[in-house]
Length: 306
Image 1: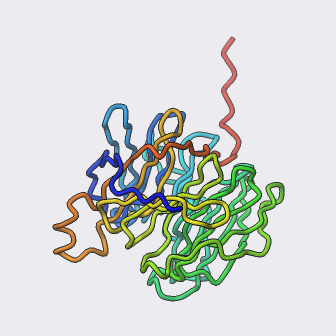
Image 2: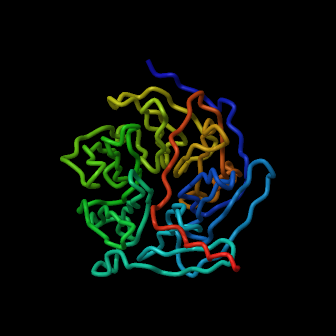
């Protein structure tokens, strides 16, 4: 049975007006929600308890974020990965991603088990299936895991880490893969869910502690909760057409934050959706799973002076 919820206690916690809000990341150590505006080339930090936001402009389009064990953030951008220090604003590129495919860019990304960072890529023109999936290890190695993707989205793991979920927005499919936690490699994938019949595309996702996948659906004005067997458990309606991703946050990880986009709307649609590009939140009645930090070595402490 599908529990369909229409605007159930959904609050726009920040009328941000992001052109393409994406990559929500809850920082437990800061009690804040980070996100990016890809088109606006900005990283945002929102503190719900204070209702305050801090923003940084970047020299490239940021697409995804991860906290670093060493401090600061790992940022996926147009064509690579960089370190970003919110304290100083320093943006330091680390490695190029797919330099042999200049028509591609990075898209969704997330840290997985063992503190590795996984980054999906896409055709910047959103037409060709030239994207893929890569694993970035703390030692600096970059390994391609999948190829032939259209628009890579949804990087999430089951609570035991044994199943990896990955979406292609171009084909409107979410696929599930066996995942080797120790080696960080995938087994053969299978179809988990499709949104083609609904005329929308699966975008970013978050995993809850019950092993259910929450997926924001571009063009669907909704977030859908899928059971581990792929059946729809719940549909949560939103007042914007293009939700882009979601992340659990709050001190108890019991609030689901949802980012959204204003791009892709015609003038009339934009007028009817004044909150497009905003950040939404609701309490789904379940808790999320904490997202690991990128496991680079923490900065060594200086010895005390005698």
